[in-house]
Image (cartoon, rainbow, N blue to C red; front, side, top):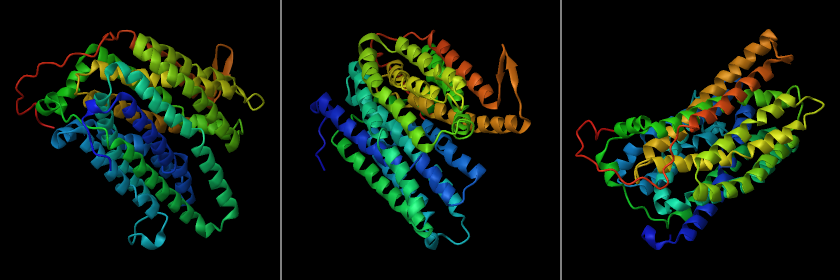
Length: 448
């Protein structure tokens, strides 16, 4: 293990390089343990309907535990320690997922699918705390004027892996299912999952040399609930949070509709779907690089507004797509490639608007509550879509006939575009805010 040095002794480029390679390994491991891989694993174990829906939304719902990250940081008196402990805990807690594929090792009377759901919930709760502490820790290890380029480089590492690993894993899974004895299929999932966990553990190694300055005076003296209230009490931060929650709700609403429309009316195959995703990731790489530079040199707010409008415009192309002209989806996925122009400056704005050295509470409100709303909205959208399909409901609007899928697309489109309005009142500080003078904390303030 590399000996830890003070953060000031580790140059910015060394920190950025370590974070980049860590993110490359992390994304590869995460692709082999979550998302479509996990959904297929569950389905091959017999998951139907509600259990599949649970596998999709549990990570977002469990992630709301991240709101308590700041209380954990105070108890550990540092961010890096929290990241390390809870990252390792997440990996250990996730081992119930491959255990679900080994019937001989199941506790008597325990349904393997519920073992999978429970393990997923616990591991994602620990992962949420790990992530918030990770951002809080690294934001102190990087100069504020480089946050945009720093997070952009991290994003490029993630997108580069997403161009390759999920595609390879998806096609490998299809080949396995067609050519391997069905009795061995679960073991292939188990081996793949364990390999993903090992890669996730390896991704932690480059970060060990990046020092932590420890919990700040503000983190130690001011309670978590107070910081959460103060974050929402600040007008600019409040508008930024509402923008993110509004956008997350609008985005989540169409999760089931997109999936159903692709493989239903449009009959787009899995291979073509991976090509569409690669278009999104390929566009996202140059967008990330440009967004990082613009955010650092020109500011974040205007960039976010443009990113929201471009990414939201993807729904126009979903509305245009038909079985004969499904290729409109290439334009839709290219528009989604603009999301780094929303995500990178959004994170930067949270850090700029938060008290220096004490940004865990607003970051958790921004990311974890947004994830929770996206998950719940996705579930609601699925129920709404089922109801509309069952009723064979159509809506006539301005000469257009909208079916069930199109009704959700239009609703989501309105929500995505109007999310930009919440950004207008934000006053972006030209520099990072000075640390506030902290009064002596009362017993109520210092409670978690």
